[in-house]
Image 1 (cartoon, rainbow, N blue to C red):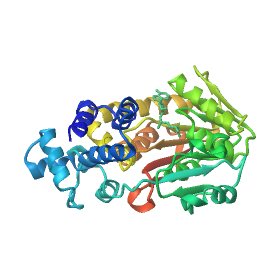
Image 2: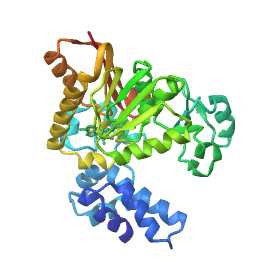
Image 3: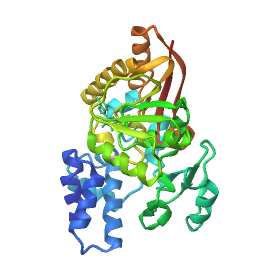
Image 4: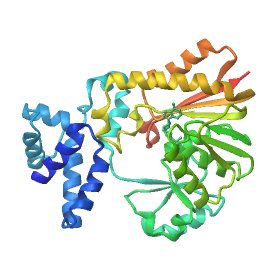
Length: 345
Ligand SMILES: C[S@@+](CC[C@H](N)C(=O)[O-])C[C@H]1O[C@@H](n2cnc3c(N)ncnc32)[C@H](O)[C@@H]1O
């Protein structure tokens, strides 16, 4: 019990990401066996997933009382929403319930068709009972947590880890041969697009953090991709396809990051909305006439999604909405995402 409290006090309660803290904690405390490690992490996440319900049950917010109560009884009413009020007000309740109640670990894979095929990887991963994903062209799901780092094919870039929801939205981006990925991060969308256009054409990937682009370069090299050029800083140029996968609240990813919902405050979302708008206003100048602008978030809140697009379209009459889609956890069994494809007239 003391260990669980120690972890929660040094991460969750001071609004630090729990997964990072736990990694360091276990690295430091080498004497814990695998049973101790899984007991601690399951209890830590159990308390976090049921934080509000534990407070109601115990009529206390003392972490010691909450942990004790959780260890005595870890059964909870699945229909009670365990989220801050701000999220209950702004996110579809079916999705909130789904993310809270469906947290069996799974890993989604995108096969790199430049180096391998779905059939080959399915065969190789047979011991893990792989399932071919239906909504994407080269995706596989494994219904447990697996460490692929020991597999030669993973190390050599034959497949990547990417949530099916992210693959679905990436599949909706216009696959031209001239692409700007403006919020590229470590490259989920850039690498997907490079595979889709068969490593022919050009992809320019930019991010405000150059260290993320270094990671992108490593991943591209591993995957045999040669058409991605990372840029920092970025000069103005025109592209047929511009992707703005903007920083957002991450409300679509709460099934796998349950502590994040307690770190999110309304003022932070307001800042993110402002940043999203600034990015849209910047990248609109990089879209060729007749080209497309794909706005993407992993949020399930209208204020970060369609309302951003409505705001942008009201100011930019030279753009029109081609299509939009929300990937919903409770419907698609994935993380949640939003994409709007806009046409530059
Ligand atoms: C949702 S993540 C991108 C994920 C990535 N596209 C992928 O598929 O793996 C948003 C990214 O936007 C970057 N970012 C934040 N503010 C930015 C800005 N003002 N301009 C460009 N990128 C920004 C962040 O560093 C982060 O990597």
